[in-house]
Image (cartoon, rainbow over all chains, first blue to last red; front, side, top):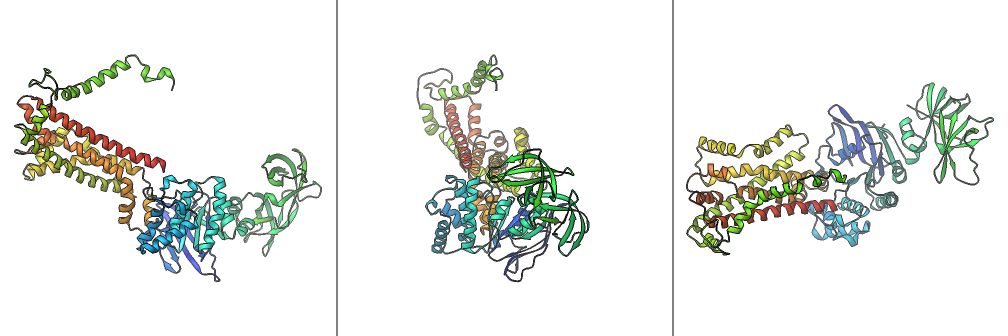
Length: 361
Length: 272
């Protein structure tokens, strides 16, 4: 899917990039435009090609076909050390035999920056990641979170045109991860550097990104803002991968423009937005668990019997078995005001306006 | 593991262990103790003395042993240096080249000299040198030593490199280091404990080699082991015991250094 943007400067133009390993295709004609000063995320399950794409941009993988342009200049043929691009590695790859300061200075020294300028820049980035007091330490004397920040400082020091981040938060524990997310986004905004962030964690992607490219099996499934990919998933993969969703088997009777008329299990009809051109016939409807409410069975769009409850703290997950034996999962807020029907009770289900969406396969 | 299956509780375990240790170390102990014997006989104890050590450094045979020791040390230094450089190159090639054809074959080829009976290598080297018309002497010893030291230098270096992920070099290249700089500034310093340990191992292997040296050395040049052997042929004098003890101490010292070097590397790795 190609999203051409006229309004903003394109930082990275990835055009029909293909990468084959023998007979295995890791990337299949991937095209993306990443805008200047954007926090762009490549999101997908392991093996979807996101890391291969990142490594191709960094220069560690040679692409089989296509072009990668950085501010208009084709960089696909350049070795890694000639690309004005820096990477934060998954395991940080801090040089264990060098101090924090020597690590951060490494890139600046290779660029032959004058000593005074390099040291000033080093102090500046260490300040940015709040590690000025640790300049003389060795990586093994730092905590995981601190190492992660050194890796970030080291990659930011040479002022790259583009910063690549390969799942940099995956080695941190949950609390720290949440704090670093906010910090990382702030640093991106302060420095104005374009970030390409690779993750398999959809929550990370949703909270930090300006735009997300959802990838699967070496192809880009959808590109959009976090809200777009969550609320208007294009196909079943995107709907299923980002957040939780219910996929209902429906039969599509007619499609007018971007609205479709579908018959729900149980016989009721609804009109809902269609993600793409969908032909009449069997289709899949995506409904988010938090966009449905439990009602009385009479006159409801869907009816069924409560199968199970799962207590999740902030929410309660309620599984309802529909008449056609499909199981639908709802999220009910854990509150005194909400009465959760007992297991076995007959219930009706109401959908919020626009909650359902017909998907392409 | 349950107590019943503990090897230490098998009958005769202690006795067998002691017997093995005795057989291994008793001769060495005898040599070391009798090197301090104040008697020209090698079997009758005549009191403690350092006279044989004095004899080694200042006696009639001193110049001969001194020259032999110098030959041994210079050959060991050069052979270990060359072997280490070759071993580093091959370790990098074996571990870093993504699709190196015949990796297994190369590994076998590098380590084959460890398996080949030394006498075969010795005879083969001699035949080879005479076939190409190389005059036997200092140079032939050096070349032969470089060759058989390679696997000994290679093993610790390769073991060390196995634990170094290639992301370090990638990070270096990502930060604008050329491949040569990435090697010099990042990979080589990280390999250093292995390199040091490999060098020391190669050094002592070269230092105390007798068999191959004896075949390829030709007339008129001696290394310490061949010189000792030469003296022993005319009857064992206690000064030989003194030299042997000194050589043993040097070897033990180097092996310990080599072990410490590789352990230092491991400790650093664990903390990271």
